[in-house]
Length: 471
Image (cartoon, rainbow, N blue to C red; front, side, top):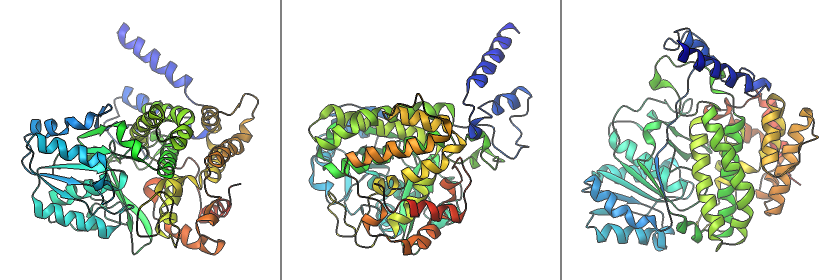
């Protein structure tokens, strides 16, 4: 009994020390209070009472890629699918993987037609390859585009009778639960941004809608993320920058997301609990740590490709932020980024060797960040101020009412120093495009509903308008 009283007292202390801001004011005490009443196993409430943490096993180390052949041997792999894109297939990261596979006698087939910023069409091409190959293990070498494509190929090869939209997030797709056991997947990330090596999320452009959507389920997460910082030394400067902006927004959005115990509906069965659950005490730790690394190392990593410490640190920051947002989720920056990338007209980002117009994911996300966090700050000003402080701003004399402006100004200064394009107008958008951008954001409920502040179409219109110019 004495032990139980001590636990109860500790939980009360934790609850009383939690954030007092409006969106987080109920702290993280609901789940404990319900559990102590013996009701946590019965979902008789509108909002959730629990959260789960799921991420891939991670192995980190310079040169660790050479171990992958032994890993596949240890798994008993007989027929391996190796996925990458055409640019990477000519670079050292893929060569290192192939060398290890050949050295250890691992039978494999190479698929190098992954599209940078994949579409439903490119996903389906990879899925067809996977279905025909009857593979027992998958290996993805590349950035988020490659890893996400490999996740989708593994998923649909494991569900050969499924229609493509069956697992795509609702309301665009059917959002069905994944019932079959997927094959093991080893992810070897070559960029420091998406965190896809840790998460159960795969993102693509649905071409008919001109907007991104995706598949989100814990079953998709790789078996192992093999994080070799030597691979990031091959990233061009602008790729390093845009990848880093994805880390920045993953951390900021997951840290400020609606708390998990205010998210609705409460799932009637644990299999229905979404991968993106809302901010929670464990994700908060990862998000804040990732922000500290971004503040210290991103500028160095962009300005000097040979700065091994900076590039290695950003590779770890990508993993940390991935663990955070992979469970807490993201919100408006990501929800608004999908139509920004999907409606691209003629913009061709520097540093990307592709034959089609492209707004890289990290850039599409970060361009709205000043407007978004100025909008959301009044719901949890303490968290917005803490983020600004981590990013280097003195907030000691800042009032809570000014939290949004301060974080927005901090982000603008950060982006200006890294020579980011001056808003959506600089990548080809005009005010006349705003209605289509809003229309493309509305279906992204999987993420937008995690915004700590509710929003209307009029609010989204204002946020896009405010993002046309940054400086």
